[in-house]
Image 1 (cartoon, helix red, strand yellow):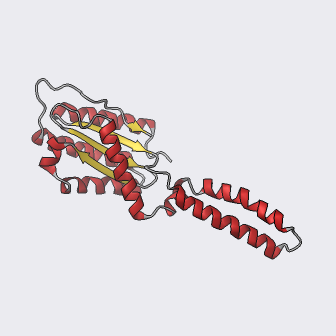
Image 2: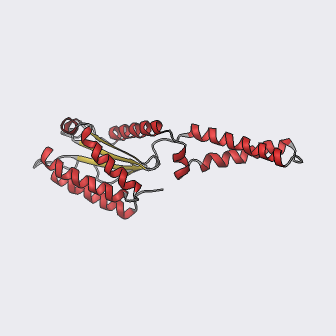
Image 3: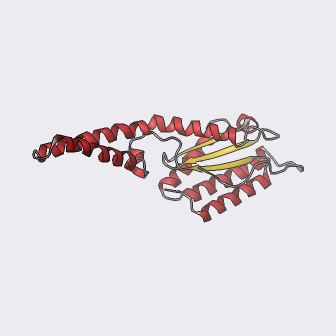
Length: 205
């Protein structure tokens, strides 16, 4: 289900490095398979399908013993649970609100765990792409957010999401990183003593 190939990842990492050569921004790009498991919805569907399968067997094969129909529910339920945990089928079960909340929460967790709150000038920035939900979150630490604000990220988020829907996730990320690089070279220029405080490699998982 990965949206980026290994070659795509290298291109994005090179773009991150280029941005950080022009500005004091410390950018981390994260591409995760999903931001939550959403197991509750899968359980509901699995139970419903297993009951329906047992009912169908008793309805159309009255000669079959009831306990056989009951036993049938177990493999049907397990198979359905795992089937709806993958790709497009999994997306069908995710409530829109729950997807947004999960991706936002995952972004905040990564922002803290990856050291983005500990840069010298509070200029850490995160771009998170959550593949299952097809959601994007951009967060900036205080040194960036005070100058940009929430509205400053919206256009970039929309651009990456549109690119994902076209099957061009890598290009969408590259476009946004290039735009951010030009803007941050003015808003947040690189100092003569700047060092690379955070790794440029894409965070996976």
